[in-house]
Amino acid sequence: MVDWDDLRYFLEVARTQRVSTAGTRLGVQHSTVSRRIQNLERELDTLLFNKSTATGFTLTQEGERFFTYAEQMEGLLITAREEILGQSQTLSGHLRVGSTEGFGSYVLSPLMMDFQERFPAVTLDIMPVPRFISLSKREADLAISLERPQRGPYLCTKLLDYSLKLYATREYLENHPAITAPDDLQEHRFIGYVEELLFSDRLRYLDGIVRPEQVVFKSTSVIAQYQAALQGKALAILPCFMAAQDARLQVILHDTVTVTRSFWMYCHEDLRHSHRVMALWNYLKQAVQLNAALMQGESRELVFPPSLLVVSARARGSLGA
Image 1 (cartoon, helix red, strand yellow):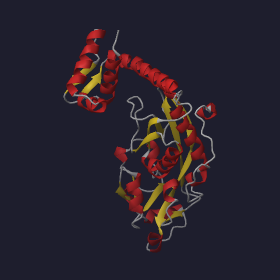
Image 2 (tube, helix red, strand yellow):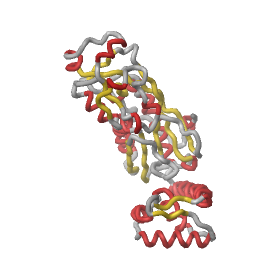
Image 3 (cartoon, helix red, strand yellow):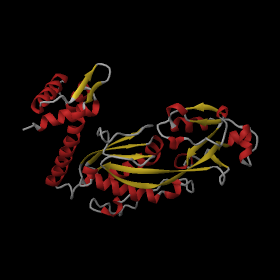
């Protein structure tokens, strides 16, 4: 029989690709991790990892197949533990949520503080990062992304559409040529993304609006772009949920320059029976819908669900895509 502890070590190495990192996360010496992996490979009589000083521990073809089964076993144990501990009545434990940078910082973080206040026995990690979150490596329990995952054993739902508009400070508008039509934009400078480092084509906002040479400031971070726009030196297309909350920024060409994108929320299929994950899932579905006006730039204020709102871990109606 395969030792479950060996499976834990296997999963951590597969996700981190480093024995030292896996040891840190498991609270043991790296030599212990190496010994456990050797035990498992010997028990299965197969090589699970290709080992390299450059790329670390990468799964072999047999390792990839075994990883799928090990994850399923892990999910079953998580579910069994929550059922036995009775977490359907009292939510507790730890949750990690990955998100796009802007949404995670300006919408998700304040909502998560509200959720944590409602369920004080739940602790939270929020990861607003300018890249995709890997659920297969267990980087997070829930992920919020610009794109729906195309494959994988995921439970997925569309949160909502959101708008991006063209913004500038009052100072900028007072000191530069007037903008009354899209053609006027040719006389202005812009802030945008570093094209070759985009993690999603959904971030290509300026294509067809301005010439490449007009983009004089670029960053991989939407928050950096927002801060640059506040300096009053250039224009920027920004998410309304960020810029609309700041009275220093004004919308330009409100009806003609609007970009629409969507947010998708997903988790690993084996977490659909986790009460705390589903409670957070349902809370976010309801809370984000309440803020549809902010997401479209029609409001300047983030609102929170009423204190009497029931967030049911067993409410499955909101799980559909």
